[in-house]
Length: 357
Picture 1 (cartoon, rainbow, N blue to C red):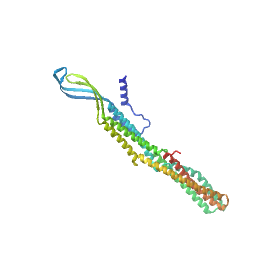
Picture 2: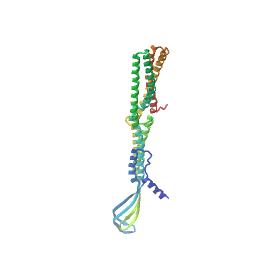
Picture 3: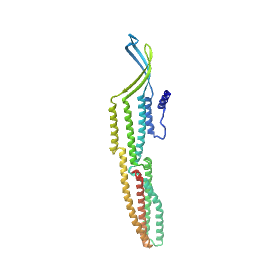
Picture 4: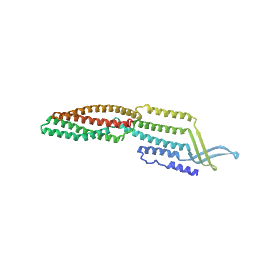
């Protein structure tokens, strides 16, 4: 039963394949390269030797000696090599996770400081789409009043110019949205938490370095089993069990720990490393959110003033007040479009900064 279980395990190690569960091409390459190295380490090794046996006393015949040429054929298995093969595949798994984290980080950094702008531009487009029909109605009303000689040509011309400005602004916003959609297609969809993503990248780098240290630690040990047949003047079987240990292993363990700690420190202190860049971007997002909150508050205050003044003038219902009412209304539309952009940008960037509220 134990032999069959061992054989089953050996065949699973030699013949197993990575699941194609949506892994990237890079992961497939890493795992295939690791498998190519590991299967050689998992498998038993056939050794054929030719040797000249030294002259030795024969224990059964103290006065005789044995010497001459000898041929040997053996089958050997190294448990340490099998563990080394498994370690190689575990490193490939860790490198795959690191590749995934690095890819997500690269996509986010490709967008960089423009994070959240797509949502903001879409909010601006939605507001302008809703507002332009109102401006068209205002222009039509001014033209009708002009035809009744209750509005001036200057008033109608000013309204048409302001409407053209709004139309150009809408066209510009749509162009920006197209560019940002393409950028997000290349970059990262959604709004990841930058600080959490930086931690994921560090954890993936730590896992790779830790597993590489585990692989190095196996080099201090040797455990080989070999059995075969030796033939000279006569043939007989032999078996060899070899257990070895390097006295440098305790020093190696300490060196591995220092290497791992140094790698962690390198990732924590180097602003040019990917985690450092993500944390810098997170700080930028937090600063931007605070500035946008101030901007939205200023826009709200100005809008309140404009609405109050417009409503005061509109209450008079005099023809002379209509141009000012129209001008105030257009100013309100312009500021509300800016507010829609800024408020949506602040909301979108909260997730990047790790603030879902």
